[in-house]
Structure formats: structure tokens, C-alpha cells
Amino acid sequence: MRVLVVGATGGTGRAITTRALVEGHTVTAFARRAAALPGGDGRLRRLPGDVLDPAAVDAAVRDQDAVICVLGSPPSRRPVTVFSEGTRHITQAMAAHGVRRIICITGIGCGNSRGHGGFLYDRIFLPFVLRTVYEDKDRQEAILRGSGLDWIVVRPGFLTDGPASSNFLALNDLDGVRAGRISRADVAMFVVRQLVDGRFLHQTPLLTGPSGGPPADGVVIRATAPSSAAAAIFLMAWHGHAGL
Image (cartoon, rainbow, N blue to C red; front, side, top):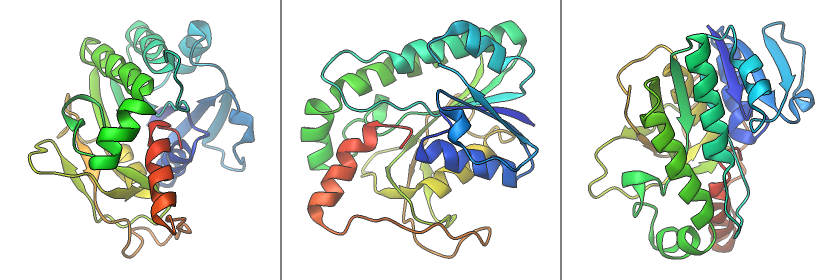
């Protein structure tokens, strides 16, 4: 497929771009600093652009088969709009060009995933550090629901740089669930599968599970797991940056 990855330069965006290429797709990597991505693969097109520029987004979406949206933004006390405005531009361009499938990564704290991140995340970081980010992520998800497109919203747990393991859960029923860590490589594996898999269409699965285990495809990514409780808390705080 011809796949547009919006927000391709963050850690998760890079993992998704790499996975899509490994699985044989042709990828357009769209980001303000897309030129920073390594070249060398003839199926990778690096396209600099701003998701807040509707003309640039329209040109990027044209001739694609599907879109993967992995926008990120650092925590801010000021109102955040990049997720909703960028997604509105994407969905409008998709409707104009007849592109149906969009997979969007949001995170723990959206919709029914709120309250499933553990005490520190739910009671401290989400309301006091990530509040404006997740207010806009909620608006982003609402735009997708009302778009009329074939959307899937993916809400990963706490992201690590561990290897792909295939040992994770995709859950819609969150009763009694507390999100754990999941590697970006596993998130990328799941997201790329959704390009051709319809089982989670119009759903919002939470991804969680151990990030260890044997690599699924023989590619090892060095883990950078937190070495202390303080580091783990810092990782949680920055989970609001979906493109990490």
C-alpha cells in the first residue's frame, strides 16, 4: 500500500515507518523535519511539511491508500490544538481524495482509557502535566468519530524502546485493567497490521503488555528502560508526547 505517516520523525513515528517498509509498503514520511530521516530505501519518500498547513496536508494525502497519524506535542499549560487541527486537515484531505483508512495513535487518558494508568499517572501527571494535551486528544478522537472514514484509534500504554516481542494485548474492555509498558516496536507492529485488518475498525484498543521476549522479525532494538522509580515517573509524564 501507499501509506502516509504523519509525524514520522518521533520515536514511535520512526518505528512505524520502519515497520511499514519492512512489510513492503511504500511510505511517505510527513513531518516538519522529515529530511532528518535516513534515506536509502526507494520506497521511502521524505516530505517536509506542517500538519497545520492544510495545503501541505492535502498534497501529502493525495494518491495515498491509507494514513497513519502519530502526532506529538510536549506538555504545556497553554491550550494545545495541534492534534485536533492537524487531524481535521488530514480527514478533510482524505475525504477530498477518496482515502478511507486512517490509524491514529493517541494514548492513555483518552475516552474510556482515563483512569487506567495507575495512581501517579491518573492523579498527578494527567491532570497537572498533560491536561491540555489530552483535552486536545479527546477533540482529535471526536473528529475521527465524526469523519465518516474507516478509522482506528490506538491507545498505547507507557512507551519503551524495547524490541518487538508480539507479546502484548489489544483491549477494548478495560474493566480491571491497568496499563503497563509496551515497546514502540510492538506498537508499530500492531499499527501497520491495521492497514489491512478490519477487526478493530471504529474501535479504540488499548495496547499494553511486556516489552521483552524474542524479537518477532530478528531485528533487535536496544532497550532504554528507566533505571529508577524517578526515571519511570519522568517517562510517564512525557507519555503525552505521542511522537516520542
